[in-house]
View 1 (cartoon, rainbow, N blue to C red):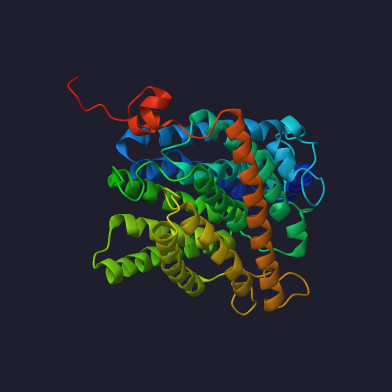
View 2: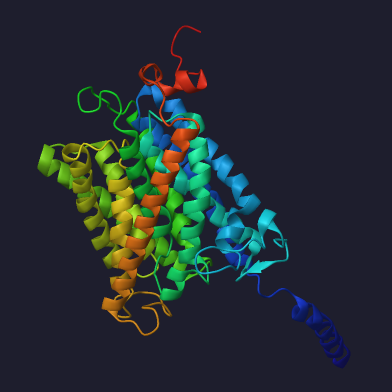
Length: 434
């Protein structure tokens, strides 16, 4: 018996060095969850957002929207490898990251970011960088040149997305150090995309025939399908932003689901009250409003708060859409600003309220050090205003630059024929005799 005991002890001692030298900073469970979230968030863009937007435009432009989402995914991915990741997350200053990680220098299978391999963290953040400019497509759908879209999206990712993301999520970013709460992208994704789409819609002007000719969605079945993909993918978007496989991720998913459902119902009720009929388009738009609004607050709110946020999102975003399109006659073609922009603003401000230790749900979370609710909401408002103003100014300058380089808008003949034909020499549908 003693022999077996000694043998067991020797074996245990022999294994101790392995445990001691093991990379215990890497958590396999966290890594597995973020790898899954990477797939979910990329799924939001391709095919989720592409189908959601594609169904909302006219049949002659469906392929152009799918193409734009696909092309943005490719170009931003390459830029991320070349330098966007470095500008966003490499140590730098309060306004922008440094150049130490250009071409992913130092990002190896052994480098770490918290409990994750750095390559996993980087790829997860890449999916956010991809979907943000893809959202802007809805603001200029059916009228921007493909070449102009490529140049604008690339430049915008460099001079808007990268700096703002650094401000908010990098350890030395100026909004991060001030204590801004943005769990998963209310400022970084939704306010930037929404504001850029609004500016683009104003600079480019309305589509030919807007307000006089019907411009109904050509395939709501496609839109609803894409919306369902967005809903599922958003679990990775918000749940993955916990950067761990734990209760925080689970709660983020629960509140995301709750807000989406509440936003959908609120929008449908508004339609019933105003138009006497609820539409499928209204329900899925309300769902997206609920998702976008909960995003910045998903790390600070419980199910009850998420229900309230979703209802507010459905009500406010419904009215914002009506004001923008019916009263101001701004052709934000697919409602990017009133849904994502307004939703991001509401959610970012409400994150400051629900970060309260009595209202919040996550241990260790709450107001930034030394702040109460009023001062935290003040920081949130600072984030909203600074990000919105910076995005609006730089987007305007970029659009004017691209206009001088290649022109922004297709000609009248091309717009009438549809971008599928005029820009790509293809058709989204061919239902003739084979």
